[in-house]
Length: 351
Ligand code: PBG
Image 1 (cartoon, rainbow, N blue to C red):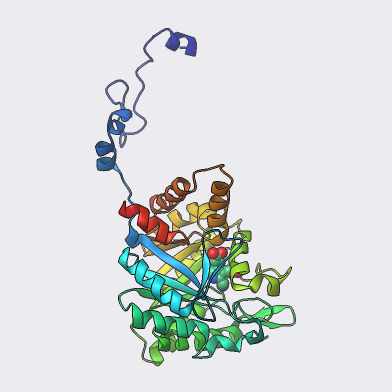
Image 2: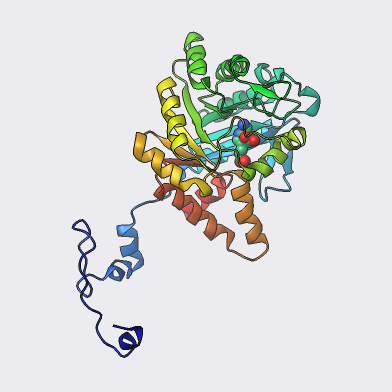
């Protein structure tokens, strides 16, 4: 039967059900029926976004009373430690369970070997102590990776052009232990060296931090969507034309993500993460289905910036597309989302 016939009011033929699991036949079955009213749509909603799904990544800088905007991340500021403590209290009031702290290391403290990473008085450690003292009920997460501290902007240690895996593990272990000492609740290795989860777990346990959680950036891709983050912490200039493709994953790969996640679980990861988010929703779904682990996703700086920039230009409604993108992560199987929009989203969810 052609479209013209339908236009004349002819009834479409009764079709066979697609599968025994989804019996459904027009006109008996009308899926629009469940979409009739707002209350009914709420009732049948399969996924829901809640403030307790959100982790708020924050940038911390030196100084007092500082709140410095980041040009490539509209609405996101670098905060001094005192201001961060105030904002952490706000996040806790809104029901956000945890923050992820990223330091803007002063350039003069960056070195080839990234030694500032395991200085117990570095900016991250001071921020963690301040937040835990001011707002003990909020969880604090720290990145374990060297890029905020190295003069070359890489996450690992260099020998010539090579990022040396096992040498880097020693540095990461020292970094994780000082973060734990400072009070960090969740250690989040984002460096993509092989074997780092096992090395960090063993070191934490040896130091008496059996209670600290590891969220592994398990499937982390070499992505151009990290651009604004690198501006925010000032690692972009250091990295220059350098690439992280020898340690972060190739965007072409999906089975490999499952191997990365399997290894990190075997080495002791308590939670796993996929990063970036929106272009990698298929990976979130595969990881969740394959491992049934607490699975997180990072809506990275470039994804956030894209939506905000389109909003500023009047091309999209930034608030609406943001909430839709965040809900999309839940639908893909994520248990939680790292997003720069966490505060705003939590405020919106509160209504
Ligand atoms: C550093 C790190 C990066 C991000 C989180 N941790 C950047 C990178 O790997 O270059 C990206 C976060 C974002 O873009 O929002 N290891």
